[in-house]
Amino acid sequence: MEKVKHTLKIFFNNPITRTILYGLGGGILILVFLMLFLNIFTRHGNTYAIPDFRNVYVDDLPKLVEKAGLRLVINDSVYIINKAPGIVIDQNPAPGKHVKKNRKVFITINAKSPIKVPVPDLEGNTLRQAKAILEQDGFEIGRLSFRPDLGVNIVLDQQFQGTHIDQGTMIPKGSKIDLLLGMGMHGERTGLPLLIGLKLNEAQNRIIEASLNVGRIRFDETISTFKDSLDAMVYSQYPAYTENLSMAFGTRVDIWLTLNQSRIPKIEQEKKDTVNTENISADEIFE
Image (tube, rainbow, N blue to C red; front, side):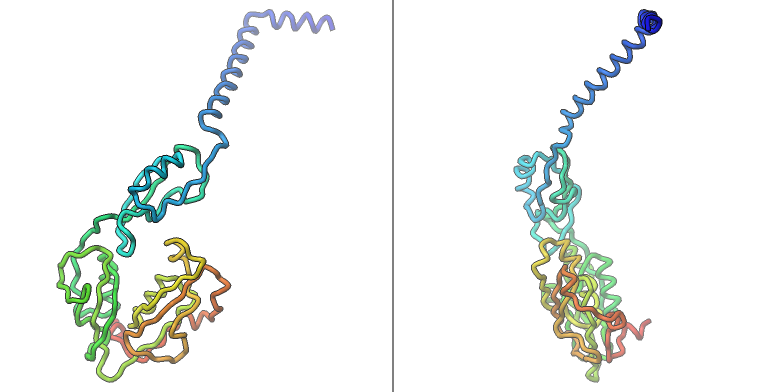
């Protein structure tokens, strides 16, 4: 035992050993101090739930953001014609997510002044071609109307807000362009697509491509946000789908949507992919 004590005494009295030990001790103290400082500075474990800023006017945001202890960054702006100008369309991080104080929140707002773009020339195109051109240029198809003409589903006139609109006219991007189309001369009719289980955008496309008009769109209680409306699926349609049902061109089709999967009837896939038509459309002739 005495030999061990003597050896340790010699070891710790060595200047080199003492220097190493002092260095290690100082390093440990500095490391502990840094950990305590960072823990206090970053408020470790202290997080806040991000409020929902969507549908709030951008002028009202500063007070809300300051109250929540966050920082606001306008990341992008879009123009959605059926949304109020100046409101928040989307945010990142999402509402309810827990973040540290002073975190940046990136938002997308609906522009107060719409971007204007020229109207394309649609006359003489098929309905399908006109739809593709409008979507490419940032427009939407509005109401479809029909009159007797040999050119089934051929665009005879293009209209905006009830009147004819010439090619090149500057109107807000996202506007709806109404189309007057031919419906044949011999009582041609179209079929009703099966819409059950489709999302909103796909259901609207199926209705238009069948030479019908999108009627009322109704959402149930599961839909509370714009994103919900995009993810919702059709659980009912009127007129109800029936095989071999023929309809007049331009008939309105109403749809009801939900996020509740249990409300959506189970439909055979073969039926879901079916669009019953009795007319030979101009789209088929041109393909």
